[in-house]
View 1: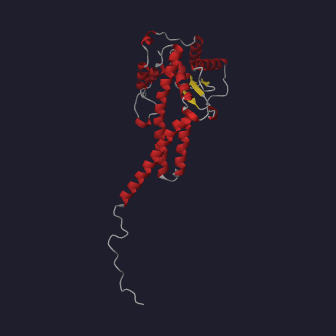
View 2 (view 1 turned 120 degrees about the horizontal axis):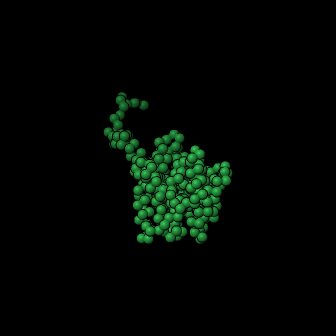
View 3 (view 1 turned 45 degrees about the horizontal axis):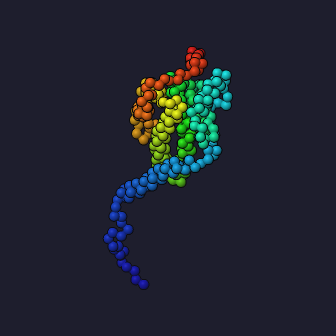
Length: 281
């Protein structure tokens, strides 16, 4: 048997890439990014549609409030907030129960809803509103989140985005990072829509209860006056609509007679209690 004296010449171009490795990487990374982001937004879209079908009783009962109140005055405030909220809820409402919790040691003007029908109200919120109408708007807004099943939407979105991160290997791959960040963008985008929907529902509720919506913008005006960052636009990273936008929305939904309607003051005992607590601090 004879062997060739030299290696044969291979045909030109065999096993050689026609594109640069960098271009191939960019194409693959772009395809992965598009797939993950599309899946993330699909999860958000699906969560909005699935949430209303989830029985309310399946929601985890998440409350961030203390188990009891340290004084009878705090209990009285909690009872008042619970009573006012119940009066705002339509009789035909399908939500079995809503529990309102009073957070007397939180100075930030805030209220928020958690799953299981829980609403939390801070001391700072009561300091920020000037009438029962302004307080009722905030309570109605948080109830609207519960009625519209927004806590379940967020829960389903978070579960979906966590699964994406796990499937893409969040701990050891850049794809997982993409999944987490695109999921956060989707979550916050839906959150802005939720806030707008809750504002619209709340206006309907207070109109039904008071016959007008005057005073609904009190908290937002307070935020605008006291927080110079309140109306900064942060694009996709801003979870709530701009404060000015919300005030304009509420003003646009006022009826002609609203400017002459009288506001219902907060109970005198409540104002006295808040003032005495402020002096004690």
